[in-house]
Amino acid sequence: MNSVLLMLLLFAGAGVYWSQNAIDVRVGQFRSTEEVLYLPSGKVIKTLSLGHNGLLADVYWMRAVQYYGGKRLKNEKRFDLLDPLIGIATTLDPQLIHAYRFGAIFLSERSPVGAEQPEKAVALLKRGIEQNPDEWQLYRDLGFVYYWYLQDYKKGAEAFLEGSKNPKAAAWMKTFAAELMAKGGSRGSARFLWQQFHDSADNEQMKRNARENLLRLDALDQMDILRDFISKIEARLGRPVESIEELVKLGLIKQPLDPKGFTYVYNPQTRTVELSPDSTVRRF
Amino acid sequence: MKVLHIARNTFRECVRDKVLYNLVIFAVLIIVSSLILGAITIGDVKQIIINLGLSTISLFGTLIAIFIGIQLVHKEIDKKTVYSLLSKPVARHEFILGKYLGLSMTLAVNVCVMVLGVFAAILYLRHSFQVSDVQILLAGVLILIELMLVIAIALLFSTFSTPALSALFAFCLYAIGHFNTDIREYGLSSDSWVTKVVASAMYYLLPNFGNFNIISRTAHGQFISTQIYLFAAVYGLIYSLGLLLFAMWIFQKRDFK
Image (cartoon, rainbow over all chains, first blue to last red; front, side, top):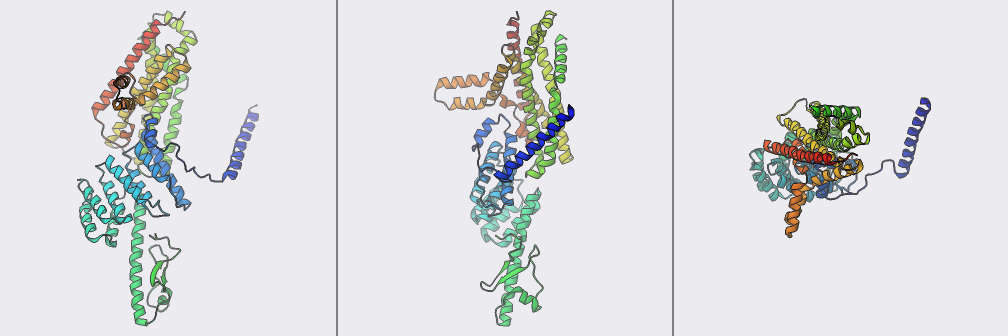
């Protein structure tokens, strides 16, 4: 009797596995998450949560992270649900600081890395500051979004200055606000800021993002040096240079590599040095 | 003494009914969460573990409190064991109180073990504790008091209604108890004085479960004043006592012939 039951159980298990696979094949092996929020209002969800809003906030934040990660893996450029998901998570738990901070990065980063919606990131961070006025890092992030993604140096400097009034704020924020007002979007300021982000990051994702941007700045510096060098060589040779490889063959330089180890490309038409199409250094 | 005997028997009955099996589900949930959360989210995993742990304690406890609570009296009447019990020198109020304390003891054990599970998960993740982690213990105490209130509600309904209806009423009251603040807000924003009075009356009459909700703040390690804990505990205990007295009064009046 027992062996018959066991057989039937195994049979049922195999049947479920087989039929589920049959459905998956017909619907699409990896069914994409429906781009629908059944309950779009965080306030409604909070009311219905029966006091478990903290747990639901975590669930919505996880959903936002998975949504963002899924889109990145598939190299999709639209992140329509990202802002609403982060909005719901932060409405359910207004003290969910990492949702404001990472959410702002996800929203601001240029496509395809992010949603390229820095205005929404600004709105998110302003909501975060309203709910958590003592969190100086939110001011820093707001200043950074203004500075880096919106190139609004005045508002960026104002945000850094406002944040620097917090006794816990990093000492550099005040001086950086002044520098931003004076120099605007110089590469030196950008490097300084990314370095601060890198050094103060309390998790690997944030550190990696800062590292990628620092590498990009290194690549920009190297490309400037290369372009200047090529101009000088062209003046000395009295003819245009066709490629970097030509300079290498002439023994003038060793093959220059970008921070990720890929070769640079010289475009004789535009007279610019560019990243190789294969390079994994960020391009914007 | 008689009350304690009934309480002890109720506790044994709950254990025999395998109520504490939910601890296994909780353990699996916490262990799996501790292992995988870091890979699927960004941010403070400890905060999620506290949210998840305390919310699960509250949810499991509420389900046990309602579904076992509504059976406490009904089962004795259904099996006719209440006749032999009440024919002994046991007062009806002692019977109700004993049943209440028995289930409360069961849930106290449940909450204690689950809180220890949350601490174990934190220790696994962080390899140390912080001073603010004491608040998890205090949140556990408040959850237990909240659950004792739910038991009192379920017990009250079970003294005069069927188990199905008692469960429905108890759950509705539990849900309404979470909307209590909204009811008051609605009344305050109304122009009608009748609405204001009714909303205000409902606010004080209905149990306010929002008083016990400190899970989110505990997860963020925010300081919560001792007075909030104390007043919430006093509120819960007094409200439960009121419901118990009401349940005893109804049970006293009930005719078993």
